[in-house]
Length: 105
Image 1 (spheres, helix red, strand yellow):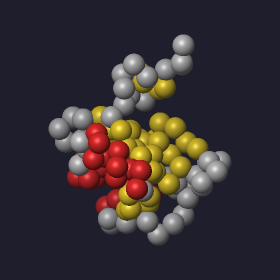
Image 2: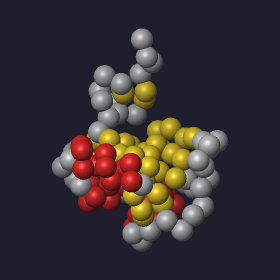
Image 3: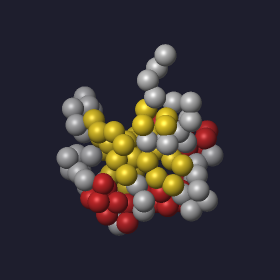
């Protein structure tokens, strides 16, 4: 499974592709592609899904230059391009400090 540093390196080399779902959600949520690259600089892994049925993936958290918190789910298995599966701004009702998932009531 890829490390955050390896994923960041792929972003730095622009070895990135968006899933159709990610592109649609970004348009819907007003998230610019530049924001993905901005948040990737300080990204940290908050959840890991090594056994996902579509291949290993990780949920990363980072902050954009404009201080916008973002979560990005990306592929974490070896492939030429890092695929962005989805992107969203975390809901403070569901996340503590944008990093810890709150239990569902």
